Structure formats: C-alpha cells, structure tokens
Image (tube, rainbow, N blue to C red; front, side):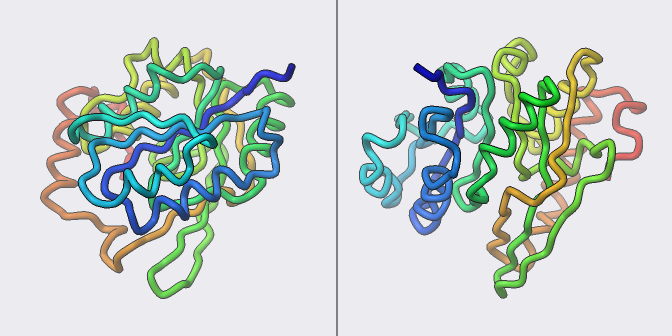
Length: 228
C-alpha cells in the first residue's frame, strides 16, 4: 500500500467565512488521496468554525484545542502529530492550486530536496490577482505565506515554531542556516494568498517593528542583513 508522503497542515482560528474555501482546495488535489493527508488544528475557535469543520469529518484529521493558544502553539501541536515525512502549511483563508501537492512531490522525488518552494498568487479584495515570483536562489522572506514543502523531522529537531510575530520567517532562517538542507524551487504559482483588506500587505507598523525587535534579540545582525 502506498504510504502518504505529505500532510497539509491547516491551523485555524475563527475562520468560519473562509475555511471551507481553504479546505476544499486541499481536498481537491490532483494527487491521489493515498499520497497525502489533511490535518486541521482548530485553535479554540469561538465562532462557527467548529461546525464548519464537522462537515469535513471523515476526510480530515481534526485536532481541537480547548482554548486559543496562538498560531505557533497550534502549528506545533499539529507538527507533533504529523506522521508523514513532509508537510506544507495552509492558512484558513488561502488555498492551494489543484496540482500543488503533486508538483511538490514530483520535484522532491526528482531532486532529493528537503525543502521545496513555489511561487504564489496574491488575490486582492477587488479580485485582481498578482503573481509573486521567487528569485533564484529564493529569498527567505519571500517564502512567507507561500507553498513550501518542509521536512517534518528536521523542523521538529530545530524546535518547531517559536512564538514570534515572524514565526515562519524565523523557522525558514533556521532551516536555511543548515548547510545540509537542500532547497528546490518549482517556478510556478501554486499557493493562493488571499488578501482580505487593502492594508493587509502592510501590517500594523508597531507590530512589525516589535516583530523585528524580537528577531534582533534572537539572531546576529549579519543573519538579518538584507531582509526587508
């Protein structure tokens, strides 16, 4: 029997309006269902999200946390339970293109890469879609909210996600600092990042500033040089 190779990890909190959109894209992949699994961690949602998730019962692995613990904690709870060699994160208001999983797995099998990254689409509230292409080699900050296949065991050994404003950037920096971590790039936009508000791409300046201070307290200046 073919063993699943990748888990789509969706961590959600009060996403009743969009989680069906996200989960539907994960379950409608062209990859055979035997090749991947879908895990949802509901981080103590207080809206109708739990009821929405019930409609997917039997098609997903559902983990419910009794109270909101924050994104990093929810991701780490999912990471602890993942039983596949690789995983990819999906936010509760984004979606995957239909051939994303098959493309990630094909690239990984062809290259032997530990991490496989893809370009992304940004869908604005107006409906306009913009393509975001990665550079070669990819810039670590451009991998946030993009389709990225990650090695489960290595992420665990690195300590998983830390409770930071830039928790994803911090993880990718730790991964890329590992010389043995091989990265491959699928030059196609396969992850759709849905911008909910016109100002969403420029988050609250105070929160961003505090996020960078967190990173500066944990990383040497040369590691952060050149990051936006």
